[in-house]
Image 1: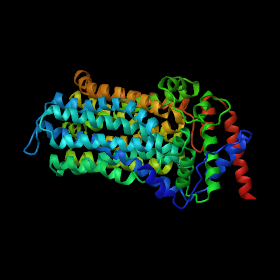
Image 2: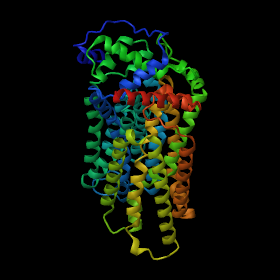
Image 3: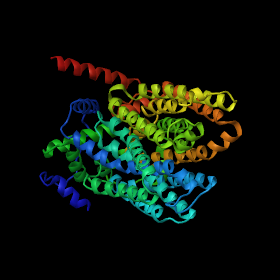
Image 4: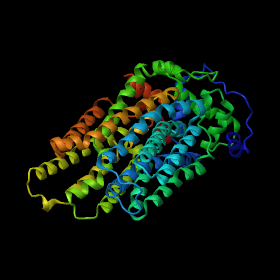
Length: 530
């Protein structure tokens, strides 16, 4: 199938089957400058990158349906009904939520192995099998145990998708599009959740499962036509295929231009005179590294710092309470007696989150990663603290009926502030901060860490709320996002418009790269003026 796809895309470009040799004496600074200059100009092939990444992240729409199903179906399963095959208890419902998280801790290592063994494209296609099997199981489930198994399988698919999508998107996107396309991962998760919650309350249980089953099938039908990433292909010694791939993604029809473009792209990614991680991509024979070798590479100072930064942001995501709040959104609004239908309130919150995450896609390349994350963590802290104060007053017996819409308004504002940065950018940073050969392992570690925290938060959310009150939980969430704000201000480098080599030098504490970037921008302005 892969050969047929390649033939379809490049039948007008008959490239020879030979490797691309990059001269060692070619000046690194000139390569970086040339590549940056080429990236600063719009290219006709960028629409292909948008289409490829939108199609690839349709698998994240499937992830969103997994989460959205619990939001819209959990209360129906607990209440029972004519169209509900099995009635569940509150404890069983918590396991339905949590088993998805357990599956998402298994999926990352499977996804990392498949992505490195078979490629990013084939791994994403394989992930759809978990969604197809999982939703088929939900469709025909007649016992709680069957629901448990289906949620576990769907969770594995979630882990595979979360690990592989940042790899594919970052290896396909130009520098000028890398951040915007990276945010599509979070945007399409919201798309899936919004779609599920918009349909779920008005269709039968089995009809909803059948609709959600169609999402991975649609993903396969659209994504199968796009090629593998050039960086993966060249890392396996398949350089002729890599040349055809980069020609497709950049809209190049000239053979020599495609070869030069690949040379520049590879040099910008792997050349770093000051980082041990440069050796990661220097594998001319295309041999695969063992897990122990990749683990050693993860512990290289630059990669270790990058891992710590992303893990801290992922921790802030989970400890902000967004996942738990969204999973129990309908229950929260019913308890607060907000005065409007809980299904409508849920849809409104999800729609606002979708618009906000889309806003991050539109603004990230202009505003930068750091400013958006600073605004996001600050806004999240304020809104979570406001909700905590409201819940504290309510639990102390103070009449808050005059403010019964406050939880809805506050959660909506929280979604705006959360999604413009903290909810969307950590996944994009995975693709920007790590070299090609360790992205899979790094993504697996990050997703497992995310799963462990998600499992703990989802199980303890209700327990701590019952013991100390809901306000104590949200005070803790507010403190967590405040800590994330301090972390972003202190440690996170700005990656906008920078090559991997430049990002690695920033991670290593080098200020030379900043001077080079400023010099290059000045030269570009002077050349434009001339």
